[in-house]
Amino acid sequence: MTFAVPRRSRRRIAWAAVAVSAVGVALFSAATYLTGDPTLSRIPLNPGIALHYLTIVLHALPASLVLLIGPFQFAQQLRARRPKLHRVLGRVYVVSMIFAAVAALVAATFSVDGISSQIAFYLLSVAWLYTLYRGYTFIRQGQIQLHRIWMIRNYALSFAAVVLRGFLGIGAAMQGIFPTLSFADIYTTSAWGSITICVVVAEYFVLNRTIAPLVRKRQPGERAGIPS
Image 1 (cartoon, helix red, strand yellow):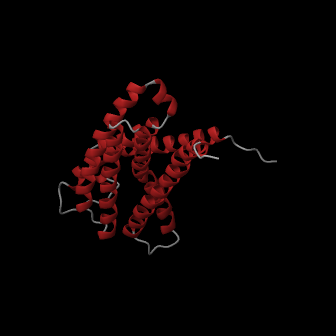
Image 2 (image 1 turned 180 degrees about the vertical axis):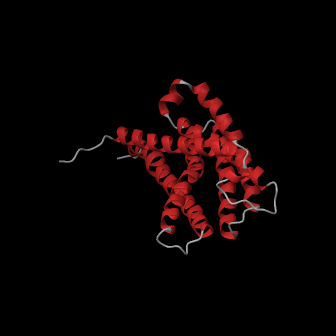
Image 3 (image 1 turned 120 degrees about the horizontal axis):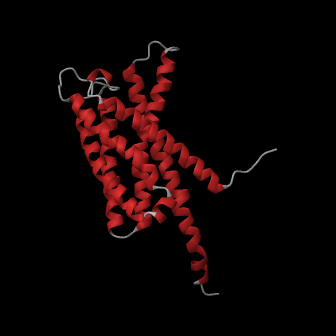
């Protein structure tokens, strides 16, 4: 016997899964880099660049704040009941993301993981800033639906950090089976894979959860306007 899960319940489960994983990664990352100990860095440091660790810290801490805030900005009940809180958290989100993205661009320049991973993080940082700009512009214009679409894309790029860590865990496990796998290979593959998956999932939600419902709402009115 099978039981159908109501759509609202599926959405709550999906939101909870995103929120729990994002909060977990954010707290873990923040705790690591708040120590100020370079030996605890999860990213290989460039020994020739003394500021490399600092740029990673300046990226990781505000990025952790972005991960923490993001899920609650998509909670419909919170937006409806506490609109002022939504706006305040939105401003913190914007400022944190700008710092995190700029620091990521610098940190990627110092990376020792190869040109492929550098390109991945350059593209991610630029896309991060661009989607944020679009989302901010639309909310300033009062275009809420377009704001929501671009912020879905923006947070999906943020969530790539969570997916990245999942892939790194899988890669570490695979090293036991394939000893020739290097960390650089695993890291580069995980970086591109996490970005790609998050972009695809974001577009799925934009098309099927945001644009499609709006189209369905418009269709009866459009048909009513057609002369018989």
